[in-house]
Structure formats: structure tokens, C-alpha cells
Image (cartoon, rainbow, N blue to C red):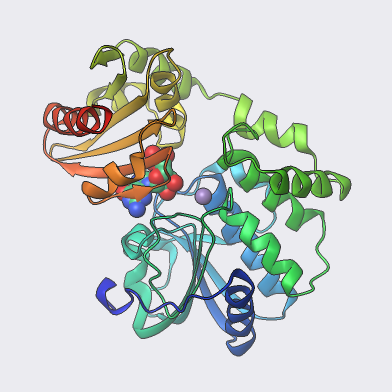
Length: 337
Ligand code: 5GP
Ligand code: MN
């Protein structure tokens, strides 16, 4: 299975029609592989588990997978122990029915896609405006604050009576993808949904404490080291933070520990775009872009082969960290002028 086989296959239509197509897809098949993006965040994990919960209720069989390690902090969520890493999947098994969640393009699935059979049928559920509608069936809603918001709508479309376990997954995705109900994606619908979930008994403050407030030692160490590199460009309108492989190794920080680090660059007064450069190895740099609103960083990330949202996007650039910084700062500078 190659990425090319999937591109542009997904039918569009109204949101309701897309939800209906997703419902049919789930009804028509019996054994699913549910995948999310590499280095999964709260929305990716929660969406995977919320889909699993629906499939469970529908009496379907499923396998949940992600390429790499699954952040342990989400272990309180229903079904967490069922998520397999690529290395835990059987060498001999492949899957012909796939649901991908929170993946803007096929490559975001990572090497788990090696487990898809040739011609596998794929349902693509996502909220990134840059989603290229890979898969034979897709539900793409860019106005949704998180992929879980779409899955919540899907549960209602399925007329499924949900419970607090499902609600906790939905709430977690909303909470983490909106930065604690603060980003501009926090619509009245998000707040109404969150209010309903609290009424179901979801422990909102405990989830906020666990997923937003708590910091690991590694996280505070990388923050300390990262802030030491804070730099400004273009008259203080662009801010950068750099973390080298040495610093990542010395602090023992995981990707999850570096979540949110880029916000320190973005949040400085006068800054329009905050950038974080994480060295992956000698030749690859992961870049996180955050905009205060004036610049569409999804467009910039896309020009480097990545994607995301208008105010939060990412990409991976081949080359040294200095080279990546020079190229991205120049591109952002062009957009600002
Ligand atoms: P982060 O900077 O936190 O990794 O990602 C910010 C946003 O951009 C997320 O919505 C994420 O899904 C998206 N994103 C990050 N890296 C990539 C990438 O390489 N490709 C695409 N298409 N989206 C990305
Ligand atoms: Mn998301």
C-alpha cells in the first residue's frame, strides 16, 4: 500500500452526508485497524479510544495501533491498554479495513501503514483544514476544535447511548486540542459539548490537572534549557526556541515533554509567530509553528511538506538545525512583510 493509492479518494458532501458515510463504513465491515498520527497527542489518543468504544458497542472487532510509544499519562482513559505500538503488532497480520483519526495526510500515520493490505479500505476522520481526503471515505470538519468533536457527532449520528468512559475520551481531546478551552477553536459548540460531558460525570478538573497542569521533571528541565535559547528575529515579531539532540538526551525529555514549549516563544508580547526547532537526528529537524493570528502557519508548514492549522502547524525539514531555522524564519519573515 502506498500513499498515492489513497490520495483524493474520499467522497465529500455535507457534514451530515459524511457522517452517514462513516456510519455505513462502520456497519459494513467487521474487523478494523484504528490508527492515529505519529507522536500522538491527547486528541490522537482520545480519538483512537473513542472510536474503539463505538466499535465495541457495535460488537465489532478492532485493533488499535500507533507507530511509537504511547504517552503513559493517558493511561487513565478507557481502553488505553489496548493500543499497540508497531513493534507489538504481529509480523504476520495485515489489515484491510482502517480508520485513521487526526491524520491530515497519509504520511502522518507513519510506518503503521505497512500493516495495511494492498487496496485496504480507509475511513479518514480529521479536523485539519490541510487534510487531503486520502481514503475511500472521509469525514473532514475543519471547524471542529478536535477530532473527538467529530467522533462525538458521529456517536450521536449512530444514536449511540454514550457513557462517562466515552465522555472522558471526548473531553480529553477537546481539553488538550484547545489548550484548556482557550484557543480560538473554542466555539460555543465546544463549550456546550464540554458542559454535557461534565453532566455525564466526566471529571473535568482532574483531567485538566493530569493533562495540562502536571509537569514531569524532564519537562521542566527541557523548558529551562529551551528558554536559554529563546531568540528574536524581524524586530521581535518572530521568536525561536531550539533544542538540540544533546539537550534532549541530557534532559531525558520525550516528545510529550516538549509539548507546549513552543507556546513560550509565541506568547511573548509583540511576537506574531513562535517557532520551535527540535533536532531529530543529524539530518532531520522537527519544526512547530504557532501564530498569534496574523500569519497562516499551516500554509508555511505545507510549503515545507508539513501541515496543520492556521495557528498551529508543523513540518520536518532535512538539514542542520541552523539551516532549518534560517529557512523557516526567512519564510515567516516574507509572510509578515
Ligand atoms: P505540533 O507542532 O504540536 O507537532 O503540531 C501542530 C499541528 O500541526 C498539529 O495539528 C499537527 O497535527 C500538525 N502537524 C505537525 N507536524 C505535521 C506534519 O509534519 N505534517 C502535517 N500534515 N501536520 C503536522
Ligand atoms: Mn487534533
